[in-house]
Amino acid sequence: GAVVSQHPSRVICKSGTSVKIECRSLDFQATTMFWYRQFPKQSLMLMATSNEGSKATYEQGVEKDKFLINHASLTLSTLTVTSAHPEDSSFYICSVAVGAGSEKLFFGSGTQLSVL
Amino acid sequence: EDKVVQSPLSLVVHEGDTVTLNCSYEVTNFRSLLWYKQEKKAPTFLFMLTSSGIEKKSGRLSSILDKKELFSILNITATQTGDSAVYLCAVAPFTGGGNKLTFGTGTQLKVEL
Image (tube, each protein chain N blue to C red):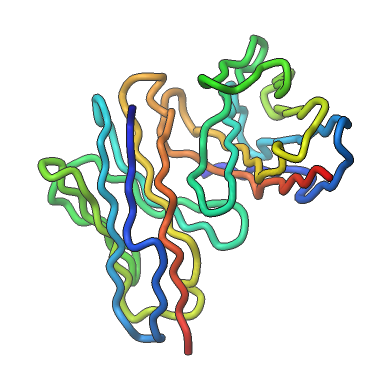
């Protein structure tokens, strides 16, 4: 499998500030990483696919200007929640697939974002 | 739109009990179905099923897929308190790069002494 590290695990911020979440693939070079969001008692919802060296692919309904994704290296993808609002409070989790097109995902430990 | 429905939503059992978790799905161009265990934060991979009728087994956990009836079950025998977690079912289509998973809301399992 793949070992995925996500940081921070928890963040509390004021409304209007930006928050950056890092996702690192520790033992695997990931050309693609996936960002999910999970609201309480709801399923994991794919937000975007992060592509190393190119633009991220966003799912329908996800604002690319609000959720900035950068995948500058094969081991690091970042998600920045810009001008965060209370409705952005959620659990954000990244994942990698081992092997191109593999559906078997390995997840980071997630980030609980609370916007006051 | 792909859809995954899990049942029950939550379940409380006693140690030693056997539980069966259900997952039904609707997906265009089905590729595989995956089960994950989410204890606190990171979901951990349990099984990936692609063929009907072939049981996958790992210790006390087993799972089987029925592609005709579009469902899968996850069985846990001789449950232990460490099995307490949310169990997630997800489906993967062949489209969208093959790794765009659709998840169910999960079954919250609590195993009591």
